[in-house]
Length: 245
Ligand SMILES: NC(=O)c1ccc[n+]([C@@H]2O[C@H](COP(=O)([O-])OP(=O)(O)OC[C@H]3O[C@@H](n4cnc5c(N)ncnc54)[C@H](OP(=O)(O)O)[C@@H]3O)[C@@H](O)[C@H]2O)c1
Figure 1 (cartoon, rainbow, N blue to C red):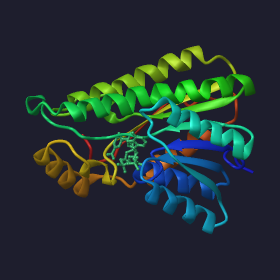
Figure 2: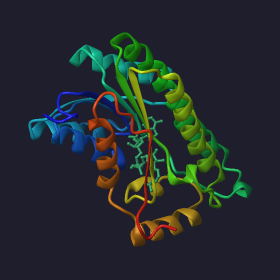
Figure 3: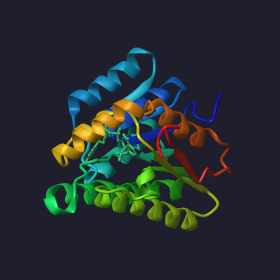
Figure 4: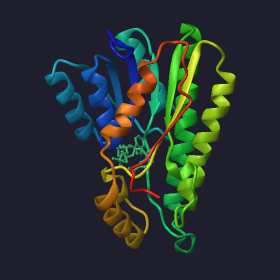
C-alpha cells in the first residue's frame, strides 16, 4: 500500500505532456483516474494504455474554461468510484508572444485556461471535499510564476495568479484538506508547439530540445505530494532542469 493506491484522482490536461505522464505515473501506483481534456482521440489513447496494463481510468472530454466541464469531471469521479480524493488542475496553454503582436485570442485563452479553469475546478471539487471532510487540490503553475522573462508577460501573470489562488485556498482550506502548488521549469512536451508568436515558438522549441527535463520529473513531484500522510501538506514544489537559469 502506498499513499496513492486506491485514491480517486481527477486530472485535467491528461491528453499529452505532463498530464499524460502524471496519469501513467499515478496509474502504475494504483490510483483510480478520471482524466479530462478536449482531444478525445488522445484522451482515449491514454485511457486505453492504462487499462491495457490493468489500471483503472475513465476519460471525460472537458473544456476547463467551462463551468460544466469541471463539474462533469468531478461528478464522473463520484459516479464511477464513489468519491474524489485529488483534483490536479494541470490544463494549460503556453501561447507566448511579445505584447506588440496584440495576440488577444492567445491572451484570452491563457486567462481562461489558467485562471477561470482553476476556479472552475475549485468550485466543482470543494463541495465534494468539504462533504467528505478530505481532499487534495494540486495546481500546476510554472517557474514563470517566480521569474518573469520577456516575452512571457501574460503567461507569467496567469501562472502568478495560479500561485496566489493556491496559497489563498490553502489558507482557507482548514485541517481536513490539502493544497499543493507544483511549478515546473522547462519540460519536454508538445506545449511550446501550440500557438503564440512563430519566432518565439521556434526559439522555445530549440531551447526545449537543448535543456528540457522529461515530464516524468513533474509526475514524480505530483506523486510525492499525493503520497504523503493525510495530515502533511506539501504546499509548494519547484522543479527545474539543472541547465535552466
Ligand atoms: N512544458 C513546460 O515547459 C511547462 C513549464 C511550466 C509549466 N507548464 C505547465 O504544465 C501544464 C501542462 O503543459 P504541458 O507542457 O504538458 O503541455 P501540453 O502537452 O500541451 O499539455 C497541455 C494539456 O492541457 C490540455 N488543455 C489545454 N487547454 C485546455 C482546455 N481549455 N480544457 C481542457 N484541457 C485543456 C491539453 O489537452 P487538449 O488540447 O486535448 O484539451 C493538454 O492535455 C500547463 O499548465 C503548462 O502551463 C509546462
